[in-house]
Image 1: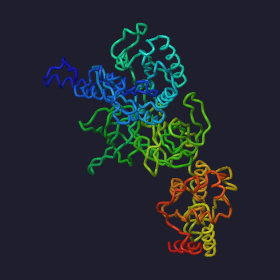
Image 2: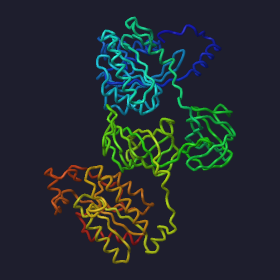
Image 3: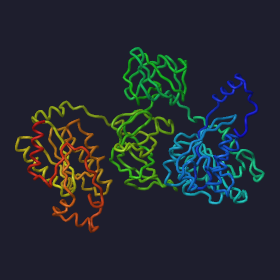
Length: 632
């Protein structure tokens, strides 16, 4: 290292003691955030340099890089220590989250250097999700900016209770106390609005090192701690004590028939052998038999420890379940109010299905309603039908099964979640569960004695949903009508749900935006499901342009009951058949959001029927469908 620790003698005993001391030191995770060019990367680089935590070769490389990529006229540019991407160095900005570990005699630290540009807000949220403290940097020349407010809102949303307000570049305003006091007063007002109670403000110059490690002679009017002093001494305890034990099960360990354990990291509370616990969401009870670790059995386990529990009873517990203190179990629900930070370029559309991952559990989820989105600057609610990249909304969520949860402010592990696109597997949102909707606990499935199978048997048929999809003018309704007539003539009980007909009644309140198209399909799919429950063969004829919604519809039905019929007709032929003149209006700009012209159609990937209307007549295609249905 650049400066060696002269107090450590090179003996096995003292080295072992030093390592043991290092292992038992507390760990503080913190982030640096704020607007672009406020000096976040410089602050971390200077902190690493001044705490003597750079190796000689790192320091030499920094000096070389500073001459080539630096922005300090050949002097050391500390930002280059964490801005490692080529694009970051070329532009002089932070793009990705950069994590660094360092340690002092008092504490260990993991710092996340987060980007300041608005377009990388999602990266900042990633860094904040595991942090205990946030350093919010403000350029003394510019004061509080939009991105400062945005990041502070996300800090509060993600439950970070401690903020260090670093008023940076004080050297460029002559270390003026009036400038510092004005910025601090403005930020404390913002923090009060956001519910951030603990704010410590420090005037500094990250580039020069003022008030970073040692107190600066340039700020005789400031009598608070330096940056490092505050980081070493701030108390980031859990705050509100957790009443009960929580263990989200990450893995069921069964190496042989004599051992069955449930592995995970304790999310809250403590546990001892003999304690009574409950497995959720099943509600089955048992007692802890052993607490197993790689270093042997424990007499007690606490929050943050990775353990494997064995129970006295054989319970059906799977990955994603939660083992909890029976006296204070978490809540169980399938409908929630939640804050959602949207992180995808494609907008969030209510009604579309996603995967929701909370802890180790992954379930199907739908945003049923966006109550409002949040103005980042004022925190005022704004009406919204969708969320775009980096927007935050307060939404209602519906899951396809119950989960054990706690509000995020009480437990990050059981209250934080991500949404995952079902087609691309990309993480499209991060969110916090706020509370269960009352209807989640008050509405239950009513048992019916007459089953869907008995209703279909009475009609001597198998219930089916034939989902016809294709461009406007492709021939969907024509073929569906022919299939309906032939099945009816054969004595089958059928019904057609046609796109145009349904928009005269059930969906007359919907337009043709992407959001309304998603809701259009969601409603029709639910109606079709009810019809198959009644034992009918239902034929659905809708453009249904998005794969995600067609997949959502398919998932409502038992395996083999949903048959996708892709009526594949070239766009040119559809336009020739256009007796309503819709394509002509769309091309003239008179009809917006028209599928195939200015709104996309996503072709099915593996439909049960792929019909080519340019080569076969509608009657032939309809007969092909009927014959296959009769065979099956």
